[in-house]
Image (tube, rainbow over the protein chains, first blue to last red):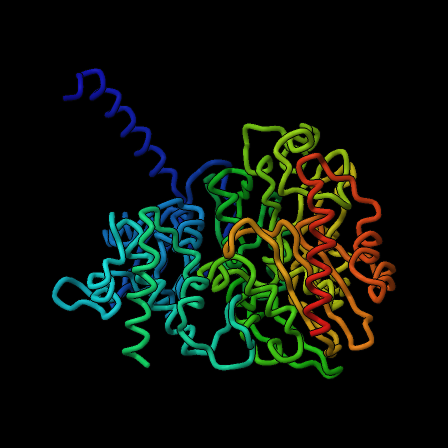
Length: 211
Length: 316
């Protein structure tokens, strides 16, 4: 239970926040903006589609796509791990390509089509990659799993599209979903529980089925 | 992250002009390096100019038989381009050796060139760093310097340029095209884009305020066996301790550029005459002025051995 003094401080903090909101200036998309007075938050509008639904949001310019997904749209499947593009927990698909949603501003993605783990499938309609992760035990704690699965889906698409990797022997030849290729291409998704070998098995099974 | 205003530029020249108008403006493209640094308040722009959507995302064959790579071409798209894979394999290989799949999908050609060092003291805002806070001192000298530079460095800074792509572009004699706020354009050899630290390690390139990179051009293909060899602490997704971009011809002549050892992609053209004499002679000539720390002195023999492996691979 908070003490009365803590409550009072919370109220004062709220008033400070309200004051800051009143000072917000809105930047219209595409319009030439004036530099913000030092330290003053700036709001901007953006529209994009997430999992097939269109959203129009008014956001502090600083809001990353990750924070917009989690805090504004309440799609909390996408996880915040390191928040610096090192761990891959925040991986989503942007116009079909995997990206770190922590390293792009939401307002930079006007008109984009974003797919999160919720858009790939749910409990009643698992995506084949989700089902394969369950079958092969491709996780332990599960925190990195949404990013692993989004990345895994995109990796198989990249191999099918003939995009080479660091371990591809022939740059100009056909690409194959070998274990070495999967491991290299998944190196941007860290799993502290160490489920890597089971993740490779899950992806190998899905790749074989797609064959 | 500090607050900032934001605009989408409508043309490259307008973007440059907008950057000149705002004292603390930055261009943002992929954002994979800038947003990381903004979260740590190492970069604190008050205004961001979004240059995505300026039509600079195309790779075109140029009349002289070379290639013109738009500044906004993503690293994945450049590495996967058929012409690059066929005629500039060292560039594909270098790109694929860098970062992760997610980062390569967003990171751009120009952004890759202009990315900041990963020196741990540049990243640690509690420590002095002449690059981050000019005049505050260099914590890396006498600090944890295993990853840092051995050549081209100064008493003020021993940071390395982290790019793999730029090392290949240096070997390929690439040229950087820019537009300035007054709408004038210029071409700069990639060799001259990055400055050595000297006493001003915070001034990293020769680009003027507001000057925007619009493209990188490659001369017509030079053939040869093209190799990018990267030595790092992990098998994937780590910065180079040492990397070598090599283009070796049948007669044993060739070009060598090094990554992971200097404040810019490191190439010493005069040292390439030593290549037919072997890795030891060539490595000694390339690193003639090296001043390693105790922690990173291993990079000198590592360059020689890596070059030996590269030359053996080139001979087949």
